[in-house]
Amino acid sequence: MGVATVLQEGHAFHLVSCGCIETPPDMELPRRLEMIFRELGERIDTCSPDFMSVEKLFFGRNITTAEYVWQARGVALLQAALNGLEVFEPKPSQVKMAVCGYGTAPKDQVQRMSQKLLGLDSIPKPDDAADAIGAAIAGFFLLAEKRRMPRAGGAYASVSIR
Image (cartoon, rainbow, N blue to C red; front, side, top):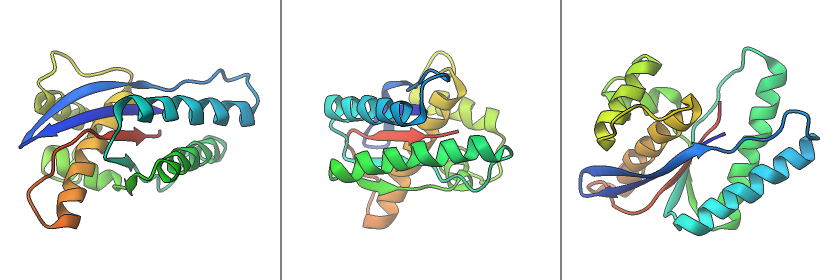
């Protein structure tokens, strides 16, 4: 599960942290979900985000993988609820629109634009971490749209699950 914390100051975005919460594939599912729950909770405690963005998943090519992704997504939403965080759920097209300016941008372009927007030397790896950055940026736009004012600043934790 990709996780990124992005700070917005005015119109500038700054990467605070990004990475992945990884669980051993041979671990029992309940323990894997517990591990995700705990690690995500620790990141929330450390960063004190204002809200969380969890990218929507519409379909999965592999139904078994999609099932696990939905379960991990539920854990993320539960952590948001327990921590009183407002949740935004951008569609992949909304992430692409926020980062690149059009909703059909290819994945590699979203990653390059995220790198440029954050002033990074390279595209964050692995891909799930880079995806989380895009979801974070989309979350700021959804927050601004909801509040009908210029994009608000503040720390932000985003979860992008692939």
